[in-house]
Image (cartoon, rainbow, N blue to C red; front, side, top):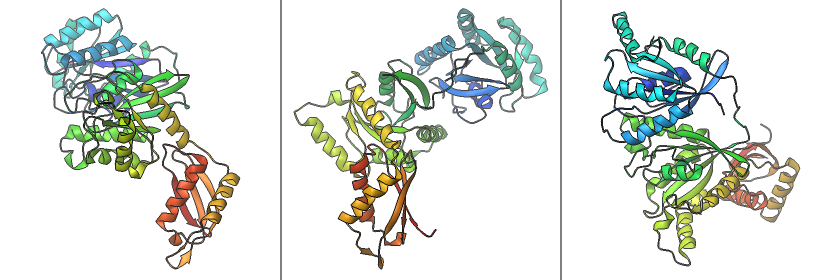
Length: 436
């Protein structure tokens, strides 16, 4: 992870997220004309010339008592505290506002390096507007057009002048996991409970989290990277542009995770949408943990947990390898079981089997339960080899893949899991003709 941090600060709708996306070179932060779309702190890696740094996008700070403004301002102030350099973005077509003055006073108190970016200077007729911002008294303003990429290089040149040399590289051995689930199942509360910090805004209003946010932390000498995601809606219900980008961000989070935690509301129970949500992880062949949250709301009996677990297993037969844990994010209870399940699933996804051992076990499986005739022939397995992990992928070289009945493939998988584990992880089994 990078020690040098740059925060982008400003009032709503001045183009902070557009500048953020320009700097990192991709559409990472959600950009919309809707006011206040960015609420939490969004982190990404960036580099310019010879320097690499972490850049933080934040929600807009304003005097008006707008929805989530208290939380947004808190998130922005935390970003200011974390940052080494602050890019203060203002709207060059509007002029200095009371919100700009408020932010200026906050930034002065921080005693951090400040770069004043006057955005939306897309035409030479607006260039004279830049000089007005000298009145803020926080340095020379830089004319910028985030939409056209004008002035971004000047901002970055100034940024690296201020940045320190010391950097910490991301540990390749860290376990990366994300939280997914339908809206309002308590993902953000669980996120905060797991890292033991108020990093993400928590609210009972459906759809509060719209961005995916990364946090690195260490527990029991293991390094983890956790990503909170927006609540995934059923695919047919993603109408709004913001919801669409939030879903894309959640998919990005799944793609770069080793383990995916499906969060379920214990009080509501399992609904069809939970199955739709987990399909994103299945399509990406990710290790999975099922987290039953809000367990504190369930009336406890001697068999409550075992009965509920049976219900979950019945509904999720297609991922019967996934560990199931019961927690309360609100009470921060049973959180250790989540980390145990994450470690178990990660180990399952990264399991490697020696070719000689694998072939010996497969030979025993076939000897005890030979395949039956199917599609005009009987399957014969010549040999097999594990070719990759995450997920474990085993290639079987056979006489004819068309002779494989799905039930025998399932039998092979069950026996391999009994022998080698693969807990929490899908097992990718590929059957090829030995002459290919």
